[in-house]
Amino acid sequence: MTILSDLADPRSKRSKSAQKIAACVVADPEAILSTTTASLAAKTGVSEPTVNRFCTGLGYKGFPDFKLALAAELARKQPRITHNIDPDDSAGKVVAKIFESTHASLCNTQDHLDLGALQDVVEAMGNARSVTFCGLGASASVALDAQHKLLRFPIPVMAHTDIINQRMLAVGLSPDDLLICISYTGRTKDIIELAELARERHCPVVGITSPDSPLARSCSLVLGVETGEDTDLYTPMTSRIAQLVIVDIIATCLALRQPEEFSEHLREIKRNLGKTRR
Amino acid sequence: MTILSDLADPRSKRSKSAQKIAACVVADPEAILSTTTASLAAKTGVSEPTVNRFCTGLGYKGFPDFKLALAAELARKQPRITHNIDPDDSAGKVVAKIFESTHASLCNTQDHLDLGALQDVVEAMGNARSVTFCGLGASASVALDAQHKLLRFPIPVMAHTDIINQRMLAVGLSPDDLLICISYTGRTKDIIELAELARERHCPVVGITSPDSPLARSCSLVLGVETGEDTDLYTPMTSRIAQLVIVDIIATCLALRQPEEFSEHLREIKRNLGKTRR
DNA sequence: TTGCAAAATGTAATAAAATTTCATTAAGGC
DNA sequence: GCCTTAATGAAATTTTATTACATTTTGCAA
Image (tube, rainbow over the protein chains, first blue to last red):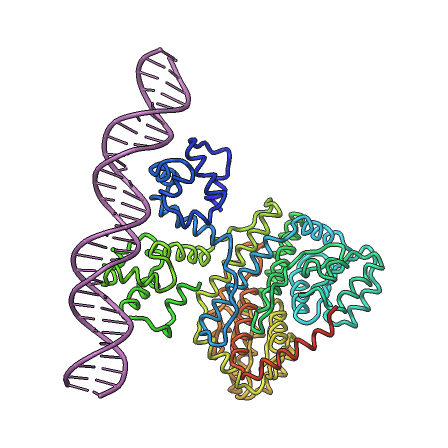
């Protein structure tokens, strides 16, 4: 994101023609890739050498080199749309596609993550009397993972992956507790009812789920994870991984919120785990 | 990663010169970016028009267009080096860093993934009488996740996250079974002993773990996941996510191995799950 | 094998694109 | 207002890419 944000930066001093070119590049970077010095010069009303000087001035060898850098930057910003997996793909291709779609899913999650909501969630977790993660099916393992990650904090954290236990817990929740519901689709009846049950008892409920889903509407705070298409039978469950990264983020933010002495606490846990290692 | 994996794919039929060019591109893609048709032609011992035809044959407008696509792909592949998280980073920065380091971890895993071993693992799973995933701590949730993903296949798949149950299982394993041990570090005593126990009974053991670790040495097949530095207290556990992606890949490969009728089976599961949704 | 058709490759010419050179113009300081 | 310096553009040059056409190779049927 260096080139474009550099060009868009109004503080950097540029000659009149250079400003025109920069504006044109920022306005439609993709278009530049299929442009020649001549056509860009014509478009911006400057001469061809000026276009070239613009590129060399930015530190590139010339216009083609600038285009390569721009292409690279745009690629980082906008990951490729995931292709579905064909039954006759080679093993290498399947691997590449899955990694690619996972990456795309992560980028998408990052772009849509609500930082304000995240901070609210971290705040709520820090202050809650107890924190409970609930999920079913694939989301059960996310809930367990979250519990494991947060065990190292001085917060009473639980995970329930059984609908009976979840309901038993929900009826006993108070406004001082915190329930975190995890659901891939946000449309699992049991989990939605669970959230509603907790809300009736005025317990705050966080949803790590698909935005605009029924579950999201029943929560007091939502960390959105796009569901993705899932049209194909072979689609990997990339959004589950996005959920886990969100758990990572929450845990890290919590760690940063802890007072200084807490680092010592973490180190002690590490020392202790060492005894189970070879 | 379409261009490079395409070019590296030995199945695709190419003319002799095209093979030479493809090999050269795969060998050092970065170098191509600062190359002209002439120099690439000289390097590979073909003529300039052949280089051009190679590009147009792949669907690009010409050599410069090919270079742009290559630059974009390399950019996607090579993420920025991850920075550690500072206690005074803003929330947005923390989020960005975690996503970035997760992505870097995924790229690293992809680069080092042994495709041959992967195919062997899929083969072994397809033929095993039973498949059991074992993990402790953070890896427990990976094991559960793997079990959940594979439940949809007609393979008896289990997960054990308790060392007592794991050991009970291990002593009963036969050469027809398959044990899959998951460990972040590959240095957890209990899991290593578990693998050894199974091997004593001539049961094949797959390790999803750090390569060159004690656990890896005790396994008959290893799918390597680099441990990463983990020097920082705030480092997210990115390799756990890499392990999950590997589980995704295994499941997808297994799905592709299934006979045609199996698609119908999957669709039926989906229909059935629909009843639990709102 | 031989001979033919089709594909692949190379040579040389051409076209396109980028860069350099040099003259001109605009901007800023005194 | 005049001079100096930076910015710009026209034209020429060089580099790079592409096309046209000739030649070679390859695959295949008789």
